[in-house]
Image (cartoon, rainbow, N blue to C red):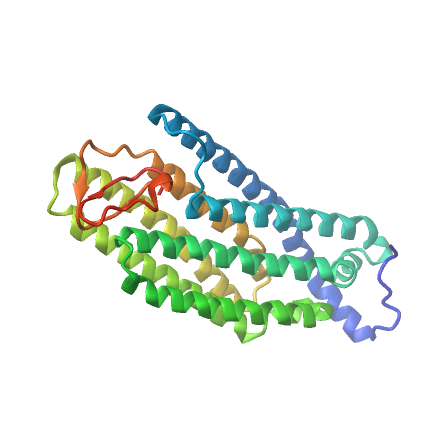
Length: 318
């Protein structure tokens, strides 16, 4: 592959591109380093979760390995994150090895966004898919906590369908505008999609907190403390995701180059937040004979085994 040809570029355009090449390339390098770090953390957390789950099932004498919605979403998120990270590494190093030359940082940026534009577009689609899968887990968790009351899930599902539509629009725009991928972020569909994500996050956070609070308040004792600890874990994790969404919206509105990092690191953030919930809630030990008719916090293995009369209040592998 040869260095991008700038012979046909107007002098003013060349100077303009050169002016933005340094912050853009610096952000690209930061994304490579940070995404590698975050993906490594995600892998360690996922392996830890898998080991803890195997240990738990071994102690309980549970035969075999039963799939559950949360386990399947975790595997899907991991696959998408792994592919996204791989493409990040490939795109950057191909650009670094083939795009610098006499143009320096400008050549690297042009090569990355011209010769590797298809890879960049695919990474954008992978980000959208990871977001959609991550929010399926978020909505599912809220629905389960509310004892599978479909009325609670109607609004977040509607928001998720809006995200699906916006995600499809983003995917189409990404491939149609892959020749000028940097200007794509100016499209308002990005802001609309992330606002829908923020609304879904806030809804699930508030309803989860409300359900756990009103149910555990009259229980008292060690059982209430344990489930309030579960609530703290969920709120902390959802707060991380909400803060990341706000970061994107702010950087998008201010046209900051940091927006590139906010978008490209999103899959790993979603993977880490989801796995942290699985591990931290899984470490909580449910008190013996803890039952309630109000609240459902089920294990991954027992998601489909809810007794309509008396529901076992568990916290492992939420």
